[in-house]
Image 1 (tube, rainbow, N blue to C red):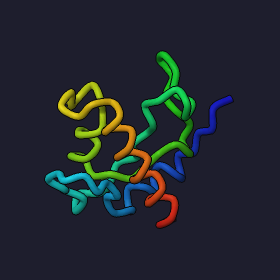
Image 2: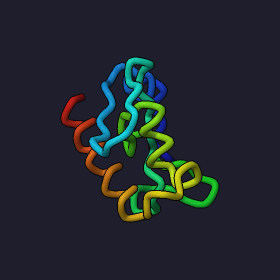
Image 3: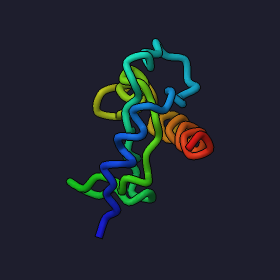
Image 4: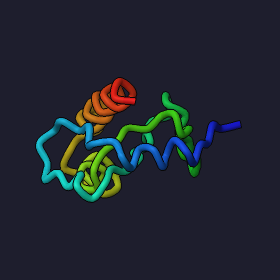
Length: 93
């Protein structure tokens, strides 16, 4: 069974954007829970990663890291930026 927590996801809306990669940050609009896009974190075909595998990021950061929305960053860059944001998010919490 995959861990789901609406309370955790709602909490992340109040966390500042944790993405360090240069982007047009708009965290004044609130952060988004950015789920991992990698199988090693529990993602599968048609299956979102568990809710503990999230990082807080503004809407623009979320678009930047999501592979379907931004093909400019390669897979390794996206994963590195997401992992750094993941660690910062959980340190903040």
